[in-house]
Length: 377
Ligand SMILES: Cc1cc2nc3c(=O)[nH]c(=O)nc-3n(C[C@H](O)[C@H](O)[C@H](O)COP(=O)(O)OP(=O)(O)OC[C@H]3O[C@@H](n4cnc5c(N)ncnc54)[C@H](O)[C@@H]3O)c2cc1C
Image (tube, rainbow, N blue to C red; front, side, top):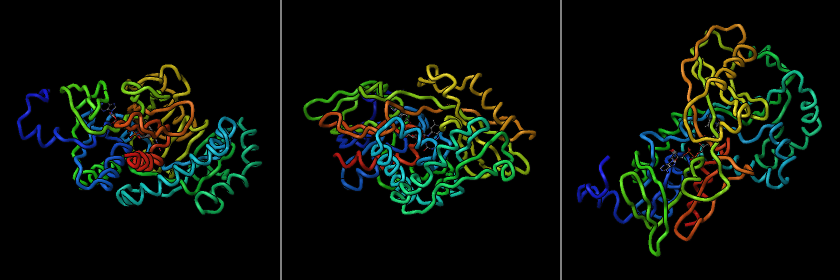
């Protein structure tokens, strides 16, 4: 890698001198932050830098669920966090999703509003009872946030409709859907380029330090200086800043094309620790972090045999029992989690801002976080 000092006069002056805003991280939050800074500062120099040759966190590796709240997850959240925090976070996700659709466009996202199903497995009948008891309350809150009536309803026909086995019942959220994550990333990058923002891949930042009139970054190509820096590195944030955000690895598999696949929509169970959907005639299935919380608190981007085996078992026993398939793709991505599900968006110092801790719902909330972060400058 050529050191920054050995670049040409043209390269130094066009890319690295006089940077007004430097965004670290080419994920949803980094792209959204850069685009919103451009709207506010039409003549500024904005640069996004990314350590990977492709974005290497979660935004291009996720399952593409446009989820903002399932019945069991919300009820679980309400036992852990105060009521207003839970519903404020749902509101932010809903607004973020609407805003993502407005900014990128439904066709570029390949958005399909097929709905989502929160599966209650046999043996978990008590959980279904809790949802029944709270259904009116949940729907009332969703109405207040989305303006839509009866977002949640019960659906006990998962076997008949989709061939899913071993379920007691499920709760459908008709407002959730699915996108093509790859298309979203390409469309977002296209927007960034059309906003005259440069993106440079392969720059890994090891530290940031605020000086009186600028911020200095140590990187694998040498020192870079910028007037302001926005840290959008989510699960990797601990390397650069001190905050309550930890890495959480998530592993995913995609099957071969399955003839006559009935399954259509997004599905999850065990409080969202497992999730699956259809994509191009295949099944995408992810999760299993709860099998080894300690081991999965890592930024290492490899898959592991025990978790991939657990996912395969679920395909055979529950999701597509009796179907012939092979696993054609498997990968891992890194989320950023902490003690609450609320993202951290704040000024870290006078010239450094941070937008991190998207949890498992960054597709919904990430665009809004980028907008909120840019508004601090
Ligand atoms: C497998 C998986 C499935 C998921 N499924 C869903 C889903 O269905 N729906 C949903 O809403 N959310 C889902 N998520 C979560 C969602 O993808 C994230 O919340 C969201 O993408 C976070 O976006 P971000 O921009 O904050 O972070 P990221 O996309 O992780 O971007 C951060 C970027 O910073 C870069 N970076 C890190 N450190 C440095 C450094 N020191 N120097 C330079 N660059 C650096 C990284 O390489 C990375 O590209 C999933 C996540 C995973 C991993």
